[in-house]
Image (cartoon, rainbow, N blue to C red; front, top):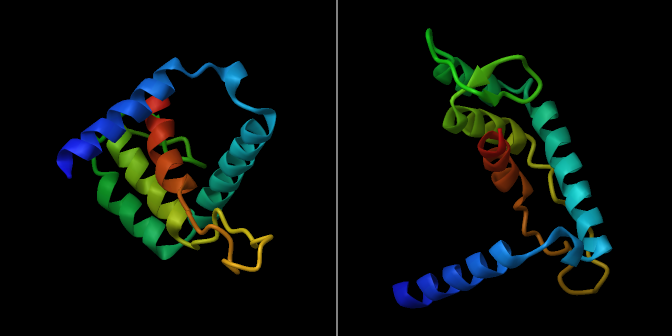
Length: 127
């Protein structure tokens, strides 16, 4: 199993490394924009929840400084802390990536629900 996983990971990595922006279809780029906007929106909404306050209290100790943004605040944290706090905020209401299926089966759409996990990690890495 590990060998197959490594092969698949390698193939995906090679594909992504050779991918050029202009090769991505316009409808895919538009859907990606929508997912990022949705992810940012639910992250901002989740900032006011108890779980978001708890995780920020846990990681924002004295002397903790970094270069990654805590979304919706002026706070800069180490990338892994920002990813954690932003991910908790994003997941707080669990409203992201929802869609209604256009086909009779599955009734509730794809339910892949992946944007905030990726976005919460990608933003600090990009910064």
